[in-house]
Image (cartoon, rainbow, N blue to C red; front, side, top):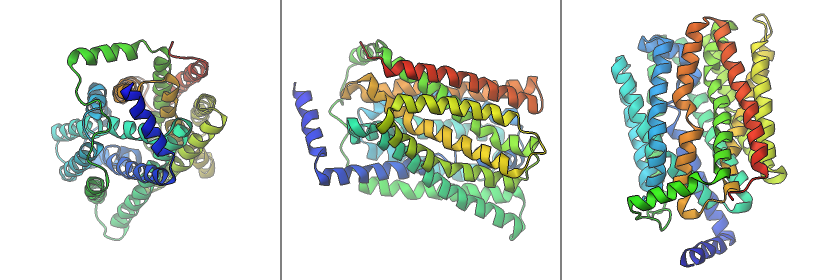
Length: 426
């Protein structure tokens, strides 16, 4: 009862205008942190072939490294939720941003493959274990029940805006270095990496100064037996499993967009700068797609909007496989932008479906860790699957089969999402 009164009091306070302003201010900080910490980790999204050349590694090496990163994520998601229930977001987020940026300076030296993989393993800790669940739980508690969609839409859309601004600046740095400074593509990439490293480091003190020092909630001390009891309670929540399936299939579709850079340059004849321009333009779809999906979900129904986005994304990937090599640049750009709009829309709304599972506040961090463990599993297995497909079926066929596979599961995810609409945890 005491816990219920505490939550009720907190919710009443959030109804005040000053509290609403504070909530949006805290959301802005989460957006800034989330937008600054990940670009280094996913640099391949805009510079994959240049990255391979600069580090002297193969596509299989790169995909295997991302599988290793995904394994770290998968192993740390549940502990990440445990940490989010016990430590303040100020401490966790500040450490994550600073450590990620410092590792970036080592990355900029273009080290050997063993060091390349070690850096990615360390990033798995700094952007997974100490960062992820803390950010998601903070936003889920900042938002009220009726505006979960828009808050998570704004979170992902805002993060996308930050990433798009940074990516646009990075592309300018890369292009200027190649054309004006007349350096090699590897040296130009080094300048991009240093830029992203500084960006992450600069946000860290802002988070430390602006966020409160207290923990996210009162659930700071649980015995191991209580942890396993709580985990068992979450495992019996059928709606939570449906949410996990929706996230899993949606994230598979999003993950497939990371391969667009290599696909466009290798099989559709675009230059490295043109591909970078296209993929950066796709990043600008994130603030639009995620924000629109979040508001649309609060208005029309989160599950209905999620299902529609899953189906539309699947169909667009299939359409991409049918584009002739000689087709015009405008059509290719349109498909890339549409994929960005739809997949970022999925990311903008799938965390809002957690509200349907009716998880207790004190278990929310653990629930987020459990959902992340399942929903973000593509970080681990999808690079491995795509690498093996492309080895078994060299050339365009391997990519096409990969896109058809994720499209098939996207449709299955849409069916699970519609099932979630009428479900309850009982």
